[in-house]
Length: 465
Image (cartoon, rainbow, N blue to C red; front, side):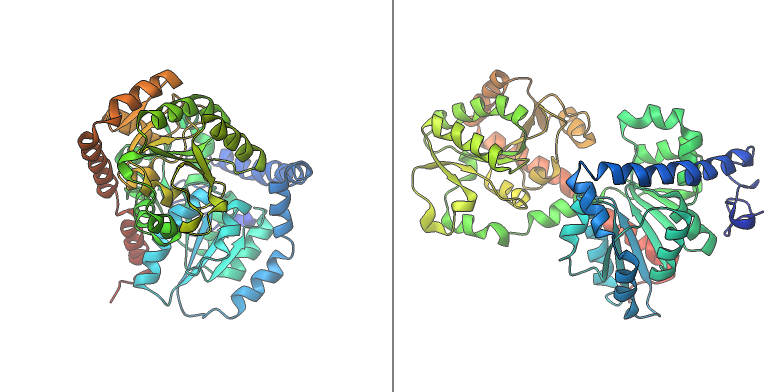
């Protein structure tokens, strides 16, 4: 039987659990966990997710999309060149898809002939990827049974495999290991809130991480955590977080909101954006926006709810009408002629534009922070916006860092938000200075995509000409 540090599998399909790696003192534990995963966990996952699909349209859509998966995959891969490297990236959902984009873009820039295969677990990532021109194959990931994972790898024939951030599946990793196909975990991190759990259950988590050739982390702190918990000194490298690369690139994409720029209705000094808000956020932030609009007749606001359901948008429209200020729904905006001079509130009832709408504001409230947890702060930061949010921000490492560096402000209530806005409303030079510091912080963190691509090139023995 082979040691875990070596390539290859164990005897009769049993995972390699010998004396050379993490389970050198307890190979029986390794076999027990592998058996438990395949005999108990995977069947329960299959049954449970099919039952949940009866109540969840999203889960049902995922199973519907997996019908005829292998026949579709055979068709998609049949015409792919056999001699070019194939880069397989597995992505959980939409957020991880955004993190994968800088890696894919740089790979295609440096090696346009390489084949990019993207697999997704969730429909929220799979749907938008259908129109992603840089991917050669886009597919759902089959359930992680020993049989289906083997068949999937047989079809796509990867030269290297990447998992973006998380969504690690044991059988896929084991099959890659047996075949000598290198695999990387990129944008890896262990959040503060999950660190105690990782330490308590390290004997289980190690079973999932041990097959990766390299773990490329988002920060030095996370590198130390992986080394401490999993004893992988020679396999862990700090590369940074590709989200910074992606938000910077996206901040330079102006075409999707050019129609608003051409209308010249927003002056950054006088525009506040409330992004990805929940009803719990709006209870606190709408009174502050009302006061913001009263402070100066030039002040305007853009409100982009997290969910653009008709009911949620209707509630926002009703509130806006009660203020007496002119309002406009984004879906009603056909061209500049649709905008009346007295428009003070723009309600965003379309998805996919928020990251680019931040360009029009100098002050941004980040939603989720009075509800389930703060949303993405990097997108407005990339535009040099001054940021504030509610008390639920500890789920975001970036928000904590911004607060520690006095580059973001946490407010506890509507009255505190009003006081903070009144203190910042007239101090435009200070807002500009802080915005430049915030934008520079984003720039200082870019480069993760280049680090990851260079590691891929070294593993495959290929360098750009």
